Length: 472
Image 1: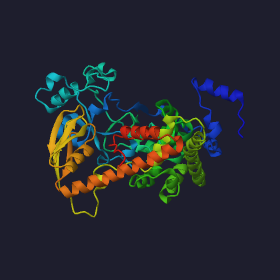
Image 2: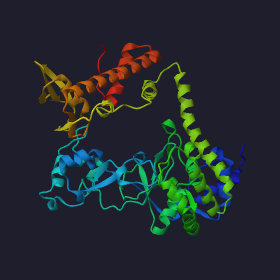
Image 3: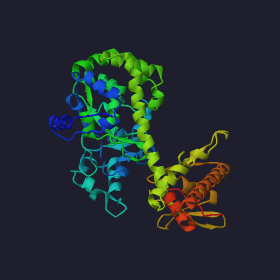
Image 4: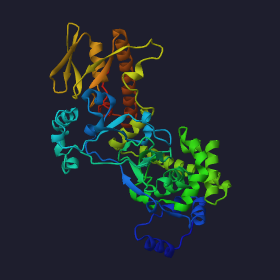
């Protein structure tokens, strides 16, 4: 039990002149309050030493974010393309490298008159012919139509430090070493004093910071995820400029060691010798006893495990209700059956034991494809509206093309070998049927209605854009 005077709570609100979170008194381990008390004269809010900025909000991700294949298809000039990080999951280390990134962002701030004859202009014209699901042309979408040019995201200087809006059990601040552009799933930390960037990165990757993150964040998301808004990051306490400079100098070598490897979940990190050495060095630099390192890490691990455990307990309680919420039921069953994720077609079904597979490329339209009629061994492939698109030599080849075509994809790779095509398609269909049967069985056990179970299974397949194969 932790006793707090009402007067102290009121004083905190008056001092901050804004809302104050009291969750730390309910969830915070004793070591947190000990740290805050000992470092009170050294800590300041992050907004005192740096600016926190949202990443890019494109308004139409389908247009602005491109894969290598799309870039190659359109031939867009390099001056209009920049590497972008869309999710912290793309990088498993502290230091972001070009090889981690899979997407480009279309950055064009020129007027159309300056773009005549460019591939960028051709791509913009293509975008202006596209519509949203409710039939609105892309340039008229609310999130982009207020811009001078709907396709322009403005001039941007990428932030050197990146922190996530939503995080799981992998706690990091990312060093944007390759100066990638940043999606709004992350916040950019901008610091005018360049000599403070690495010291700030070191502190934001320390358990002292992690402890605060767990207590200022909002832990009411699904799967135990933690959401930290921009206002939360601004209030996060960091060492003042003088202490930061000392921290950066003292931890330089041990922090560089962490930067050279991938970062694991916090429970695993807490056992790593190099992590413990880094934490002890950071504590010494802050004038704290290094023997507190294990207790702080233990506190962080406990908070992370707690927020991951609570959703599981809630889900278990909900499953005991006699009245089933079908939306929640679908979500629960989907998470249970598909806990290991979905194997991607075709890469997930090409066995390593096979000899090296040779491919040929095919250009495909943006529309979704489906199988048409089969005439004397020739397989028709149609667009989603039913118009014929292509005729191929076999049903297996037709299925391969339809299965491999993803939304927004313009080029697919097809094995030259008909034998490989046939094996991959067969393996994939067996896999789809296994998923279908597992989902049907799970839904039947919960709701006892065959028709409802099949409808829910179909919905999951549709939402994941997977082909639904009818029962044999």
